[in-house]
Length: 346
Ligand code: KG4
Ligand code: ZN
Image (cartoon, rainbow, N blue to C red; front, top):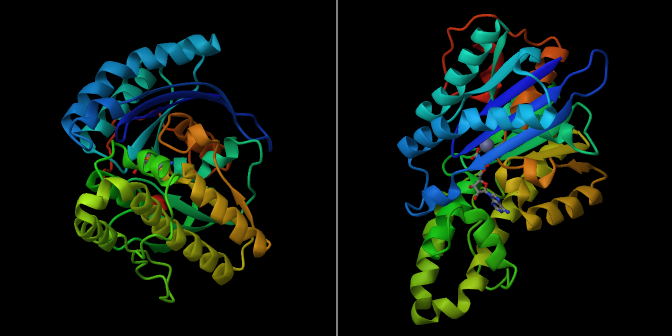
């Protein structure tokens, strides 16, 4: 079965083709293409929703053509078209949904709307070392920070989440305060490599609470206060401040993930979402999980941030697991706010 996936929830237009096999084998990623709008939004210091939607419209059809050419597959051979149904920016989601719907309707094939976070969460199954169920998932993106207990495809129990900013947002906002580029995560972590993570004691909210919730909103205030205190010294100490900021975020993410493993008794952790590309997070998790006898699985680095492959893959895995059937119903709707734990109820 050939499944085309389209992602357009934020500032990346992603298209990919997955081949799904009957039986127990995992679906295979066959071709993918991506356009990132980061350079376009950089001038504004964040994503401008209207510009994002317009750019998705410009990019999506050429990307579909590119993927089909890579795979040397005619459109008529497609079996299912999948798209990101939510959560995300409404206008941006509608571009992918509308395109997927029109394509599926023109081919007379079924359509399937996928949860963006389920895409992130299942993306390590495309890696060389796929995890096995059940596991704890740490979802860390620009809009979400959640710990989930994953029993099987489609079975997601929320263990804890951020009560304010997401981890990626904490990276992005701190980077902006330090005058670094957008998106801030990669820029801040690159600068942090040259700094001392212990230079400044920044807050680690909720770290010692018994629950698995996070809070990152106070961090940007602490970074702002610290940078004001430094005054003229800031340029010379910027790398130290970046390193201390990264250390604060990573410390909380690692300790709460370890706590989730201990509470559930599970020995497998899956890390997904853009912040999962962070090197320090990977190194720390590796170390602390090893000490616990647990194993960490990541998507391939290029599949950590938004892409079409994870959407096609999630659709294929949902169909294979019998959790969902793609429908020849072309009245689509998008869900800009859609909690993953409620995936079975809509
Ligand atoms: O999953 P994603 O591509 O989009 C959302 O669904 O939000 O995540 C984007 C987020 C941004 O906040 C970005 O700064 C962050 O992931 N990010 C990183 C790194 N690469 C991307 N944060 C820290 N270190 C990185 N290397
Ligand atoms: Zn994402």
